[in-house]
Image 1 (cartoon, rainbow, N blue to C red):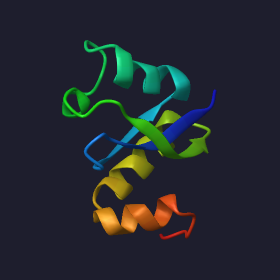
Image 2 (cartoon, rainbow, N blue to C red; image 1 turned 45 degrees about the vertical axis):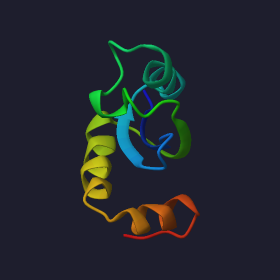
Image 3 (tube, helix red, strand yellow; image 1 turned 120 degrees about the horizontal axis):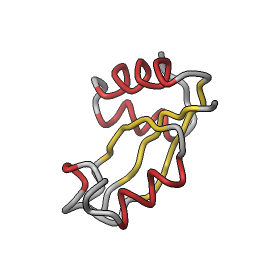
Image 4 (cartoon, rainbow, N blue to C red; image 1 turned 120 degrees about the vertical axis):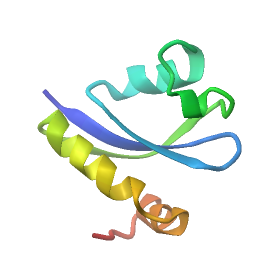
Length: 86
């Protein structure tokens, strides 16, 4: 089963990191399902997927999410643009 770490850009230009085993479903939930969307995103719709990485387990995707969440926005923007950072 594939799992994903992802970054979405919110309507206010903020970035949100998450992980899921179904990327398209999760983006749709963020945009259209107020009960399943992350609380942070409820007032920042629509969101747009700007980056994702695929992992073999949810634990690896969660580990990556925890790592990237600590980064500054500028560091996340570099990742989104395709310049890898550790």
